Image 1 (tube, rainbow, N blue to C red):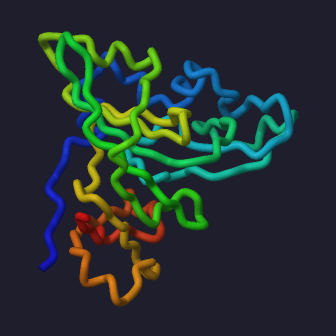
Image 2 (cartoon, rainbow, N blue to C red; image 1 turned 90 degrees about the vertical axis):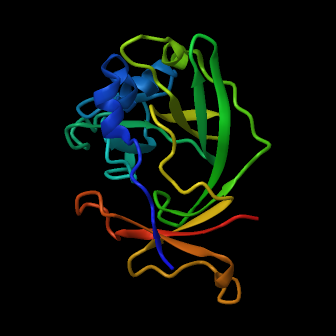
Length: 224
């Protein structure tokens, strides 16, 4: 029987709850602080290359507005306003959750590896990785500061190899299973017919306000 994913504390909730930390939603600021080659719409890169282009802010998530673009010096008008370009990283994509321990620090609680489709911005599968540990960059240190009026309880980072590409002030909203496979409307699943009975379907529709095409219908999940 289908089971609906319960509501979670999402990026919109975190934006409202943690006003002093809203800088982490600014992906251009994050890329600058981490020393990446990047710049906003209206500024051209220093050399011709293929760059990742994304909205500077995107609290909806789901990779909306992200794409690869070849940009050259002099191409100041190639991006839509509100977007930025950044050097492209290749490698393993991971999503890592942490619990914040007030006045002490943090504890890594989970790590998932994402396998992408040919689209590069749609994931065909996520699976748990219990062996990978990551040393956080100092840029996130103020997340651990305890304030009486609010306390960040969980945060999540996304990596490509050892490069942080996103910071979220909440835990991952995805199902907590050893493996989960997103199901999208009118897209075939990459699960062999003889194995599909090992998975449970969890309904979790997401359309990004009608912008996500194809729409996500839910997840096929299982524990090992």
